[in-house]
Image 1 (cartoon, rainbow, N blue to C red):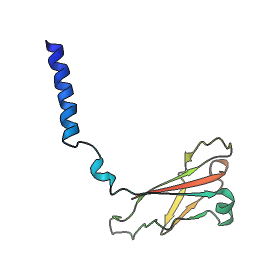
Image 2: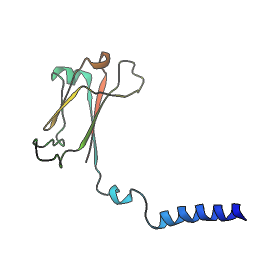
Image 3: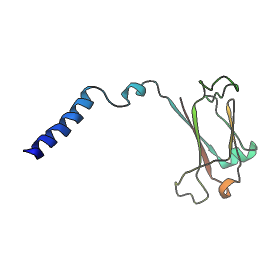
Image 4: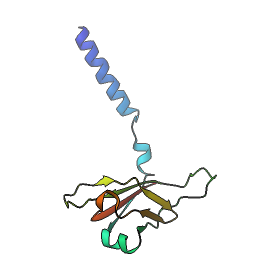
Length: 115
């Protein structure tokens, strides 16, 4: 009897959470993701600059409310579709600057901006 009561309580909790909307659905309509992929040749020719028009960094002291989440990935030299996040990046209004030699260089770069 205790086992049945416990199973009913757990199932009821999940069902109640589902019906009450416990989840991230309320954020789903507002979140936008932008992905920019650039070849190593273009990044090297630009001195490490990747143009990202949707990137807004705002001014210091304004709280950064309009700044998105930015992640920069490099594909490495192995051409094995293995992406690693790059840590040595510089964000500016509409631009991301990377060190083209970080991690031994990369064939492609991806900049992901989430608002």
